[in-house]
Image 1 (cartoon, rainbow, N blue to C red):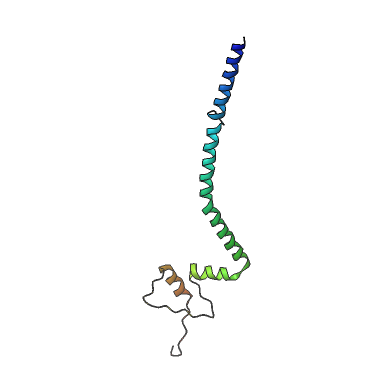
Image 2: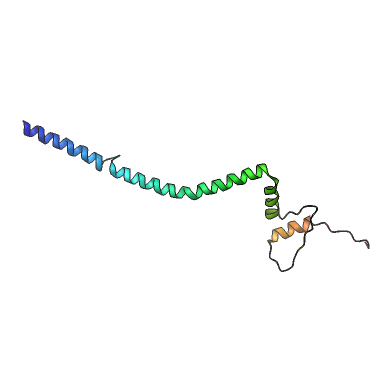
Length: 113
């Protein structure tokens, strides 16, 4: 009787150990899950940095006019009314900016006309 009880207990212990180490939700699954979390964290680092930069830009756009002016100058080639635009031949600029700047420049009327 004792022998059967000992064999049964060892069998139950073996099944429990199998579940602990190799079964669903066991040690091996935990190791795989920790590895996937580490990979995802590594992928998230540049995304967090990008989000921080974008949040700073949004705050700057909401609070200051300097950022809006900078974006208008760089993206759309805008010039303030109290400035003069000088085009230097041989300097490469984007074609669309040439058209935008050409429309925004007002030609002074000469006294001969």
